[in-house]
Length: 185
Image (tube, rainbow, N blue to C red):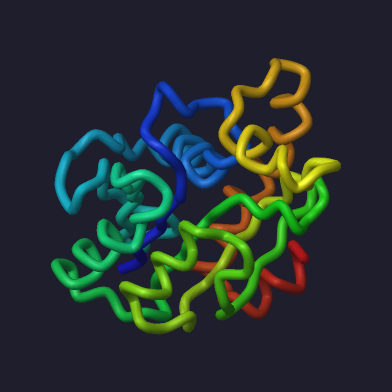
């Protein structure tokens, strides 16, 4: 069983923002694999289904980004998911728009949502899928950059990354993270 988590802030208020790339990938997986993400528990919205004949839980924490770990640890403990079967998908300002990077494990970098995840899970030994959103020209514009609504034109530039990240999930499940990293990085 895999716990697949997209990081973001509650929809619809934060839909079409750079910070909700994780939610967007979960929404894509939900459509593609017909897994309705509407059950409420673990301080999140979740759905259970199958990808590549493997049972998966798709989770969108509803705690707001900076407390994402609180929701994830509850689902992990309830379903007794081993840490190596957790996949966290999130936006990354340190990657250019369009870049998707998979890692076996890692730290939080500058991402506050990931800092929360690492704090609650007490480990970085889970699969990271980072979606590049680029960074603003000036540090002062960071918050509007990540949580500001995107125009249709800006959002269109991120759609291929959302699709690429969602396409990596069945490869991770079926063939393993090493093969997925070789294919998608």
